[in-house]
Amino acid sequence: MSAPHVQVFGTKKSKETRAAERFFKERKIKIHFVDLTQRPIAKGELTRFVQKFGLNELLDLEGKAYERSNLAYLRTTEEGVIAKVIETPELLRLPLVRGGKVLSVGEDLDGWKAMLEDAQ
Image (cartoon, rainbow, N blue to C red; front, side, top):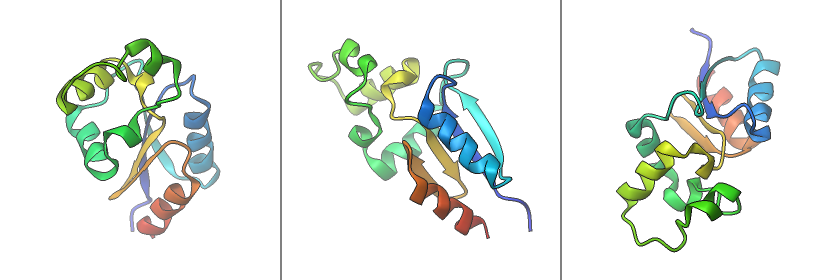
């Protein structure tokens, strides 16, 4: 049985991302951290989250980046929004976490616990 492995997409500045890192480290779970300020999320990876949660669930609608982006007023396709999110990760509700087949968005303790159970 291999140890569970979790992928965390976020930024060092995001307190929710740090909470996710802490949650998994306290449980001695190996984390693969992808700093979205250093490397954009892969389109396929982002699409996986969009398919599960829908695009609006992934966007940080209260965030300053969303306000600045004018996305609320732009008429654009889902593809257009996805492209914008890839270049401006601050638009996302961070962190995006993937553990096996379980995905979560934002600070989601229940989702993180489900990842641990899924890995058992």
